[in-house]
Image 1 (cartoon, rainbow, N blue to C red):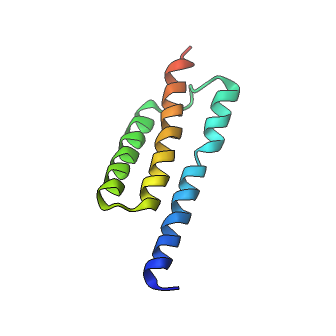
Image 2 (tube, rainbow, N blue to C red):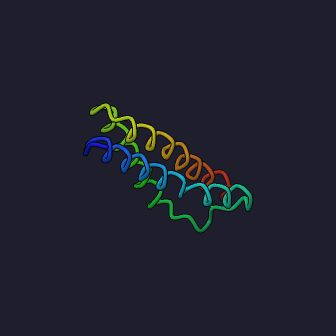
Length: 88
């Protein structure tokens, strides 16, 4: 395996791990119908950062960056939507 292939693999694994890390929070939030403990400021900044990573990935045409951040953006968007939807 050459250096580029190894870096692509590392990038892909990193993208999968960071994306999947949001799933337990998404599931918990929708099951409990509560997002009161989620920081709105943090998730707004996080979502903006993910969007910028997605744009960057598109710009440099790197599939692992595009795929991971595309899915992460959807999951983060779901948490933001829940934050507004489940307001007390």
